[in-house]
Length: 378
Image (cartoon, rainbow, N blue to C red):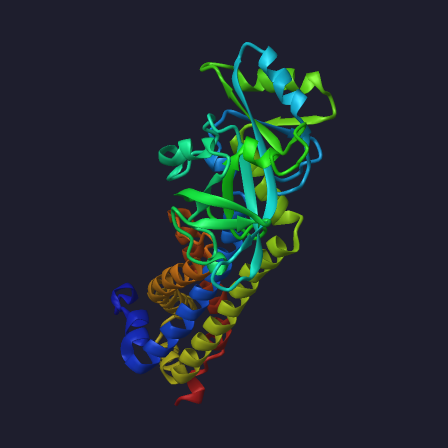
C-alpha cells in the first residue's frame, strides 16, 4: 500500500500551473498588503499621536487632571509645579508650555498652524536629535529651533533662515527631529522667555517634567505630589502617559476605531480572496479528488491536502505581501511624515492572520471535496 505521507500532493497541486500560482499568490499578497496597510495606519496613528512622551527627558510628568491626553489644551498652575521642589527627591522641575502659532511659507505666502513648545533655555527636557548641539540657541529670545521632520507645507526651512511666526520674525538657529502627528503638522521650539514675551499667561503651563534623585520610589513620590493638590493634578511616568494616550486615541476617537475596523475588514477581504482561490483549485481538480477516493484514500487525507494547500498559499503569498507592505510604509511615511514602521511583533501578527485567513478559507472550501463522488468520474 502506498504511504500517503510520502506523497507531496499539496505541493504538486500548488505548483502544477505556474500561471495560476502567480495569480493566486498575487491575490493573497494583495490581502497581506491590505492588512499591513491597515495595521500601519492603526499603529502609525497611535505612534504619531503619542510621540512626545518617549522623548521626555524626565522621570515624572505632572499635569492638570483634565488633561486626558497630551494634545489637549489644559493648563496647570505654575505654582503647583514649584511646590514639588519642596520634596527632597525632586532635583529639577521644568515648566513646559505648548501652544499653536501660525507660520508663513515664504515661497507661497500661505499661512499654516504649527505646534510650539517652550521651556527654560538652560533646561534639557527633550531627548531628540539635534537638541543638545543647538540648545544654546534658545538663550537668544529671537532664535528658535525648527523641527526638520515637519510636513512640507511650511516650505524648505533650514538653519539660518528667518521665519515669520504669528507676524513676528524669528531666526532658525538650528534643526531638531520631533515629527508631526495627526493634530500637529510640525513643531517650533523656543525658550519660555520668548514664549512669554508673546503675551501669554505666565502663571499657567501645559505640564511639567520632574527629574528626581536616583533610587527614588516613584510610586511613593507620585502619591505625595498628588496629595498636595487632591483632585487637581495627575502625576505619571512618561511610559504611563504614553500608555494612557494610546488607549485614548485607540478607543475614544473615530480615527482609532476606523483604522482598527479597517484591519478586520482587510482580514475578511483576504478570507474571501483565499476562499475563491481554493474553491477554483478544488473545482478544477474534482476528477482527481474523486479518483483518490475511488482508489481508497480517506476523506481525512483529502481534507489534510486541502489544508496543506491553503497553508502553502498563505506562506508563499505572505513574503511578497510583506515586501509590498514595507515599500508602502516608506512611501506613506515619506509623503505624510507619519511614523510607519515594521516590528518583529507586527510581522508575526500579520503572518498569523494570513495563515488563519487561509485555514479558515480552506475549512469553507473543503466541503466541496467531501462531496466528491467517484461515480461522477467513472
